[in-house]
Image (cartoon, rainbow, N blue to C red):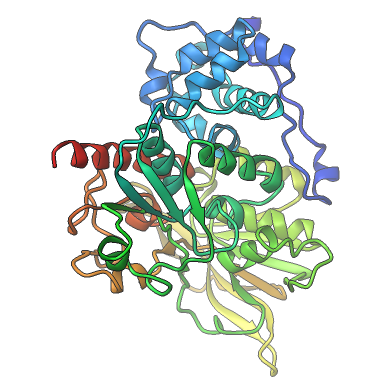
Length: 460
């Protein structure tokens, strides 16, 4: 039965990791990786590749791992992915590549994500870099945002010979990878910074502390700075709230602000950056960001409740993240929805009033619509509330760019196949187009846009 069961991977014990910000998953050893790679059937029609938004040649890289050709495995992955060490850690492989794995029909799917992580980590530890372009083609492209979509688009264009400059608003490159995802899931200095350096090694230039729409506009980049095309990968950093009474109280945060303080500014350490260290924290929402906020608050010493209006079957967060959260002691109050945030006479949070829900008919998302149970309200005592209800793009770029169309949600309108927008030679992708989504989908959009930009120049 060995071939039907994946090689287990080491993790920190739940009680230990709940008190630190060290990485939870410890990764495969060489022997474990080779053994797990040996489970791959090397299918003639590999459905796993179709399940990967950036189309990595999965059977080929896994075959090289099985043969202990780790450097070759890395170069195969790097042909398609600019961020393998990131994707190996945070991608929802269970619904993508691993969800298509033939091994998963009668057993456990091959641990594709964990093998990708192993290969990328091996390459970093052994100084292996992706292969740069042979020569430049003379065309100059600006990339706005250094998150997953921007890094991917920049890397792919650089490999094709373009002169690429990334403009990043913050002081560190990485976008959501540095401000949104906690250290215990994605180490910043060890992993993210190294992936950024790999993209720079392809010849990509990076300018931080440049706010497009304020420091300089897209029109000025094209008309005055000589950029012939622009890719917008600025993400979605504008948090949403519920609009319920008490939401402006002291002790209410967006998950964005809470996680940025912790992740980018290292507020969990002894630093000058303040962060809420509530004794009892309620996190509203059920996605990956909600899990990140809840698990961060736990590590800061709080008792944490996740309040979500649907059942566990509808939780949008990765199953692995929910499992880890439960192991660490986070409580899930499902089929509940906040209706009011309670405060004292000084405006500080004292609790959340919630109403019980039941599931009705499916809504436009395909999930069963939650319906309030009349007269079922009750109060949860807490001193901090973190709202994790999704995000929208910041309107700064769209409002300062002539001819750039946005939809009613403030997202840039762009073609799915190539990222083309309503403005000539301007492309967009990732959360700036879709609203908050996954790292790998943003990468897929960056990859499609790089192809679209290349075709634009080929057809000029």
